[in-house]
Length: 139
Image (tube, rainbow, N blue to C red):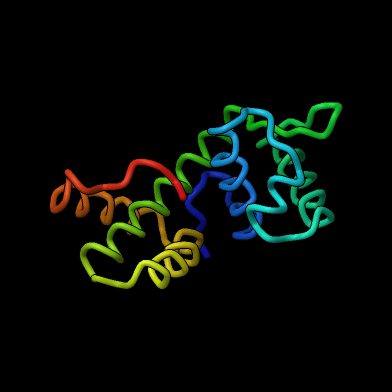
């Protein structure tokens, strides 16, 4: 299984946490665990475990009061995951005419397993075929 970010030893679930932190940090750079739990619909214990993994991987830093923020490495990987998600979502909805709910679910699954080579080709395809419609931000 190939993961989009350079750090291939984090799981798809951990990538989801990284993506959620990134999206939440667009509103406030210091993200609280409870906000992550709400966004992903998981327990705070699950968030704490994932935060530990992300911290140990050098992808986030955890502040004394429990807020987390992305490191430059974490930000780079989160942006890439979000780009993959948005390109896949666009391709599924616009090119293949998949319903939004199914496209969202499928994009979430595919973004974690697609090879870098295939993703780069898909990005090229989407930019050539639909440059004006490519989404800019994560969901």
